[in-house]
Length: 200
Image (cartoon, rainbow, N blue to C red):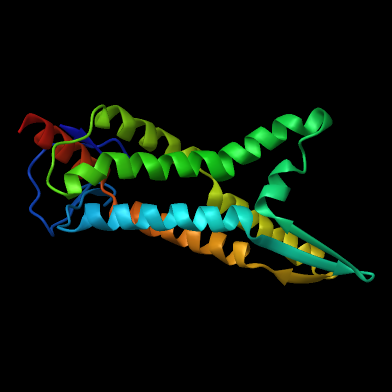
């Protein structure tokens, strides 16, 4: 039996053919959606996300001009802005939620899916690594950060001239790539694939 992640309705587990979609009979949530090239797409998107993360960290994020003064800031500057005094724990929280946890999740997915995408047996401890990646999903808050930045830009726009840097667009692309990756990924299908490949 498998439980729907949304409404907990129980369903009899069956093999779903590639290209078909199994949905919950109660709330219509997708339970399983195996696709022929899903693992390859997830790996490519995870690699793209890691590259975009590097660009978002080190390239200029925003440039503010007010009263003849220009201030440039990168994502790294934003994270370290609270590194002194009582706000130091906020630095670790921002770094973890915006940079570290998403990056760890991307690397974990590549580690789990990489060998299987080439037809090999799963890597050692792949099940444990995939479980960690799955648990990290709610805590990887890159999309929350970009929404917060957008709200702040609206409020600051009347006080200074704002120039958006390449890191901002890299971060926007990172959020889009992450959403696409999560849409391609069927957790139940991946668990079944891990079990089947491990047993073979």
